[in-house]
Image (cartoon, rainbow, N blue to C red; front, side, top):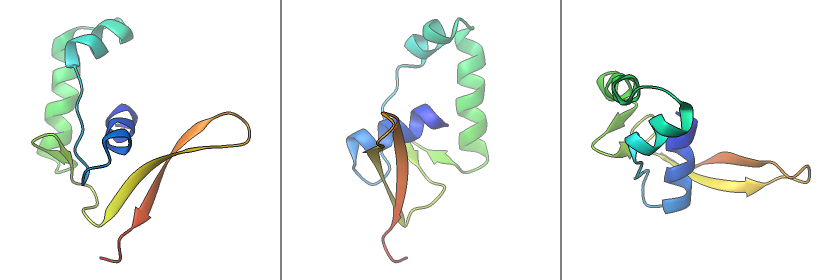
Length: 80
């Protein structure tokens, strides 16, 4: 889910994310089918829907750099 949230934070358009599942599978040294199964599971439990993060429609994600050099994803409530 982290890579999905990072993509959503970079795009910054209502939770929309874009990922190349084949590239992710290659990077993780796993089968594309395994990655697609995880993506399907996230959609089936309502965390994503059609390329959009759905776990909190009232939350906007952004990337923040920390003093220790780490980038973290921060959810900011839009008051909903």
